[in-house]
Image (cartoon, rainbow, N blue to C red):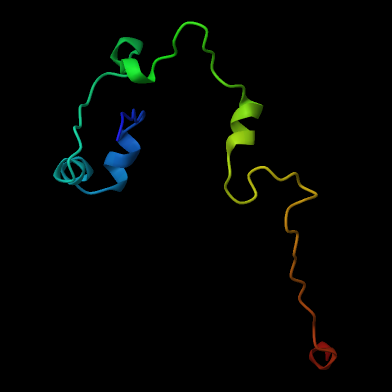
Length: 89
């Protein structure tokens, strides 16, 4: 539901077979246009008084694992190999 703009579509073209056909078969309206400001759907354009979020605001909005954790908070498990003293001969 709603509109989505995908930029740099060549990554998807390269990685998925017949993606456009599959999306259309699911009911999507797919339209390829040049990546130019005038081609942005009105529903996705900023309105007067709106501004883009800052980089830190975007990071704060992410909810995936480890995305908002500082280095000290991340799981820092490490694996160390131990050598059997009998192998030292």
